[in-house]
Image (tube, rainbow, N blue to C red; front, side, top):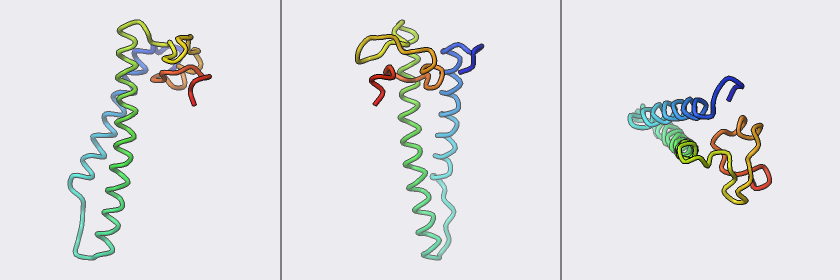
Length: 106
């Protein structure tokens, strides 16, 4: 998030980027290129597994972004879910979808 960018803009931009990345990865795993060679098939299978794992991680991040957008709507954005303290602006700038202050980020 830049100084000129609001949290809403930053989260929406992040949402769009994550959605695009997920879509791209899902397209790659939907129609893998294989031939008759066992070693090539094993390589393709390993790559598909890796892409599926990455897709799952990106989906988790996307869920975090969607929860952050909901917190913006209900007025709780920037409040730690554990201690109800304020999440610092620097942390929000670095991790706009965070749910926790730096003390509870572990």
